[in-house]
Every structure is written in structure tokens, then in C-alpha cells.
Amino acid sequence: MLAIALLAAAYGTTPASASPAPTMDVTTTSAAAVGDAAGIRPSFDDSALVTFGAKKKVVPNVVGMKFQAAQKVMRAAGLRHLSGKKATGRGGIRLGDRGWVVVRQTPAAGKRVPADTRVMLYGKKVGE
Image 1 (cartoon, rainbow, N blue to C red):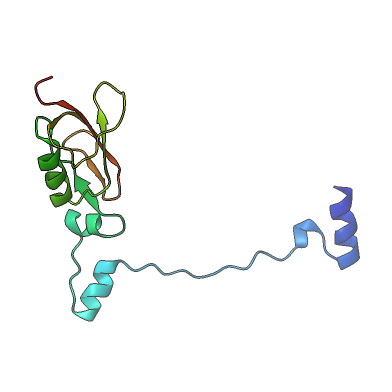
Image 2 (image 1 turned 180 degrees about the vertical axis):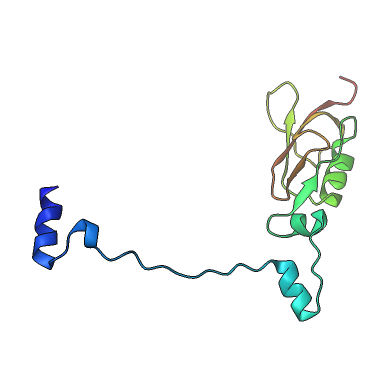
């Protein structure tokens, strides 16, 4: 408090007589109003929001498929970061290996995820 009083005395002002903070006039205009003025009607449907920024993809259900088929389905859905693990938790599976079937996946089928999400496919040997 003493510091404020000293500064006020040095500059010849008191806190009560201090000048108000500068103000700025701000005008907001909606995108629709700008579009109307330009003769353009912008679209704001969900697909436009999804494609702006990080694109979201729906994870397909590949449980029960062979690994090679599951890989093709995931890539067709736009998900390219794929890994495979044995369902027992011991060791990994190369996605090109034949004779493996998907028994579990993460993220779950139907979930909307960014296109760069890592998809983990858990598998077992056919006939196990």
C-alpha cells in the first residue's frame, strides 16, 4: 500500500483519480451474415466440422477376420497405424502373417477416432 501511495505522490495522481483503462470497440459478425453480404451461404453441417482439422474415422469391426483381411478393412477405413499382438499377451504378430485371426481390437468398433490413432489387433492362430 505504501508503494502505491509513493508512486501516486511521485506522478501527482491518486488511485481514485487514475485515468481509466483504455477501451476498444469490438464488433462481432456471424459467418452467416458475412456470407449473406457476399452472396454466399456457408454450410456448417457435421461433415464440414469433421473434415476441418484432425479428420475422424469410424473404426470398423474386424473381430473374427484373418489378419490380412482385417488390415485391408482398416486401411480402407482410413486407419493406417496398425499393430498386432498375440491375444495371450506374449509376443507380437506381423500383420502380414497368415494363419492368424483377430479376437479383439482397440479402439472398439464403431468409435470415432483421429486418422492417426494406433489400432491394436489381438490375434490367435487359426484353430487354437
